[in-house]
Length: 186
Image (cartoon, one colour):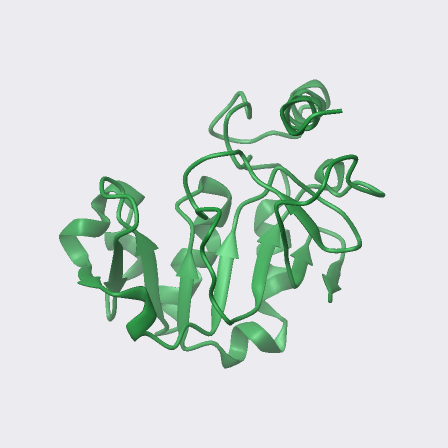
C-alpha cells in the first residue's frame, strides 16, 4: 500500500460510515469528523493543555474548537499564514468570535518568527495514526515535512482514523492522540 492509497482508504471509510463532518467530502483534507468536539474536550483535560501558554495550531476545521478554546483561555495562538507558506501569525488577546475563519488571521495576528517563540503545544490534523504514535497527514500544507518544534504534538481523530498499525512508514511521530472515547499519550 502507498501513502496515497492509505489516505484514500481512510477518507473513503469516513465518507462511507457518515463519520465526516464539514467540510465534506473528507478527501484531500485532515478530515473533520462527528465527535471532534468531544475529542477536543478530552485533549483539553490533559495537563499539556493546561500548561501550554503558546499553542501552534494548524488551520484545519477539525482543530477549530481547540483554536477557539486557546483564545478563550488566554493562550497565545500561532497559526500558519494562510497565503504565505513558512510564515506564521501570533494571535494574542483576540476574542475567539473574531476568528470565525482561519483566512481572517492576518487581520488579527502579527507576523512572528516561529523560532522566536517558546511553543508549548502543537496541534495538527491527521489522516491516519496508530497506537505506536505514527502519523500520516494529507500530504501538503501544514505541518510542513521539515517543521521541528520541541513541544508535544497532539491530534484529534475519529476511531476510523486510528489504525491498529500504519501500513506505511509514518511521516512523523506524535505525542497525544485524542478520539471522542480515549486519549493516548506517548
